[in-house]
Length: 395
Image (cartoon, rainbow, N blue to C red):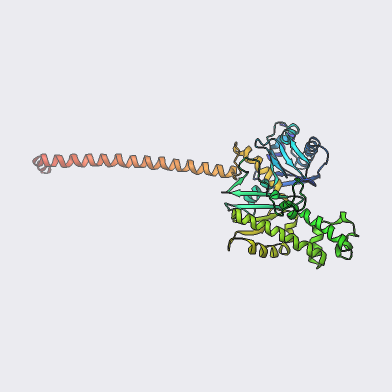
């Protein structure tokens, strides 16, 4: 271990959230709290180049904490796509243009000696929300991340559900509109094509071109490249008719997706993450109303913004890796923290010690009772058999 590592006196877990625009990297300390973070642009080159850029960013982040790679216990990375059952390969991450990419191997080459784990990004975010966010105390929850794509993470029975074949779940690629808009996966009409934040960008551009008098055109100088989900939302808030029509149509589709999730899974909590969830009541008030009208149940679970925001992916990635590193086994999506394990072990040892003490006390009392009983019996026996001797003794 280097002197720098000795001085740091920390053991960090690294969480990496690989997105189509940026790669976010965070350090979690021994208490599994996010203590430092950074981000780098996603390099649209090769996965090997990405792994090298991640290493450089991690080293720079550790340098800020006066630490080194020897102070890292584990590294987890999440991507917006499906992972093979072995946890080695990104099968398909369309927004990254990753197909059958051996990401774990590439990262392991850059971080030799450090355990590396990869997972789906929505699963990681759901795990983080279970640990310290919207799903705390819940047995069943669903997270939808409204970003460039649409991610979906599911918590069942207090654990991350990774699918029957362990590929992860792809809620974003459930069909919503038959023969609808093309999706990045190659199909048409997926939830992602209508409910991802990028859908607002697409429809906002169309609305701007159809309505050159709109605020959308005014704010962007009629430049389609300047249309963003936030701009469409802000223009809708300001009452621009073109933007309002786009936003209302978006809520219509999102409410249909949410109602289907409630009808299929009946979650205690359905949380929406991603930058768009920051729209607050402007998004959630009409969404709540439409979901209630479309949902089969007269009462349903809560529909809320995700708590951890853009940090959820990083935290979830680090938790995934930390769970393996700290406990020595894959915890299958359940949150297992070392303090909890120590507390449980301590309580078990205390209970065992107490049981031994009670057993020893019981044995001691039993022995004392038996001894007293024998002595009393002997005294009574002698008094009955030798009464005169007893009287003579009194005289």
